[in-house]
Image (cartoon, rainbow, N blue to C red; front, side, top):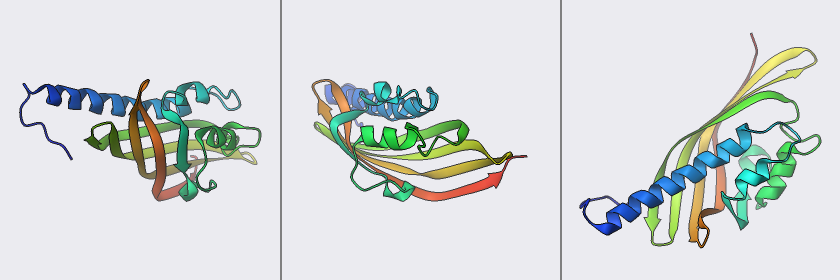
Length: 162
């Protein structure tokens, strides 16, 4: 991981700007999840600026098929009968990323805590998931974009609502 040793060095400023841009992308992913209702499919508007058009996602840890694109993930989660269709509320917290930048490529490892609540047959429940996103990013003409993301789940727990 790069370290800033001379704040007067122009490369140090570029490093900080790149780190902030990458952190913003990671937060924008969560906003794409949280600022929309089921079925509105506006998630893609936010994720179009997070992922490259050719990005590959490995969400097998969450039950998705291997090596899918983000549009397929949106349909899987938000489409009719999607994995989020039974949820009433949710929020996705992203931690600060550990980022390693090498020119126009970078890797990031970010902790996450995802919270969900739903109702089944009149009984409320909550689901919590913790883990990491492991991202490969590239600087493109339009800015930094995630080109590959792997979901790692540390643990997940469902418990009744009180």
